[in-house]
Image (cartoon, rainbow, N blue to C red; front, top):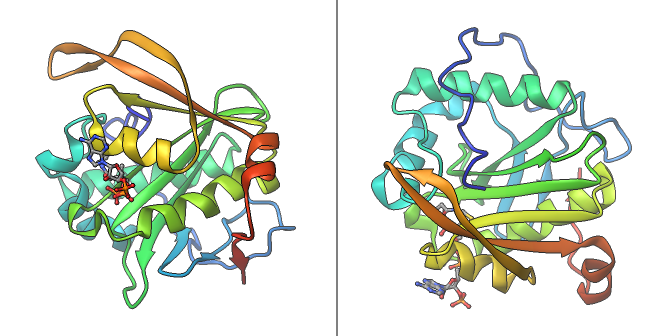
Length: 221
Ligand SMILES: CC(C)(COP(=O)(O)OP(=O)(O)OC[C@H]1O[C@@H](n2cnc3c(N)ncnc32)[C@H](O)[C@@H]1OP(=O)(O)O)[C@@H](O)C(=O)NCCC(=O)NCCS
C-alpha cells in the first residue's frame, strides 16, 4: 500500500474530462470501461468522481491518516489530478480505485486501490485509506471483503499482496482481521519523511479466500 497511493498524482497534469465515473455496469462488463458499483451493508464502493476531491482532501490529507502511506495530494486540484489518473490507469487495465461512500452519503471518504504487480493482475497489490472519523465503524471490513472478491472473481487475481509499515498498528490490525497472512518483513523498504521504514508483507490467496469465506459476496447492481 505504502508506495502505491498518490504516487503519480502530483505529476499528472491534465484532468480527464467527461469520464462517466458513475456508470453502473455488471461484473460481466469489462471493468476497464467502468467500475461496477458494489453495495455492502454499510458502504458503497464506486468509481471516484472529480467531485470527490474536496472530501478526499479533508479525509485523507490529515497527519493521522497519511502518517504511514505515500503523501496524498495537499490541494483539491491535486486530488482532481489523482482522480483523473485513477480513471486513466483503470482504462489502461493497470489499476483499480474504488471510492468508499458510507450509507447515507454521496461523496467518497476513502479509497481502496488494487494494482497489478505483473501484466494480467495474477499477482496484485491492494491498499486502502479511510477518513479517521470512520475508523472502527466496520466500514473497512465491509468494503475490504467486496474489494477482495472483486480482485479474485472479476479481475482474475490469484495472489493479493499488501504492505503495511510495521509501526502502522491499525493497518496491520486491519489486514490481520481480514484474513491476510504475514509472509515476512521487508526491511527498510518504505521511505517516509526521510526515514526508511520496515514493512510487513501480507498476502491472501484466492484459494484460501474461497475456502475461508462464508457468504459475504458483493451485490452488483
Ligand atoms: C487502515 C484502515 C483503512 C483500517 O480501517 P479501520 O476502520 O481503522 O479498521 P478496523 O478498526 O476495522 O480494524 C483495525 C483493527 O486493528 C486494531 N488495531 C488498532 N490499533 C492497533 C494497534 N496499534 N496494534 C494492533 N492492532 C490495532 C483494531 O483494534 C482493529 O481490530 P478489531 O476490530 O479486531 O478491534 C484505516 O485505519 C486507515 O485509513 N488508516 C490510515 C491509512 C493506512 O494506514 N492505510 C493502510 C496502509 S496498509
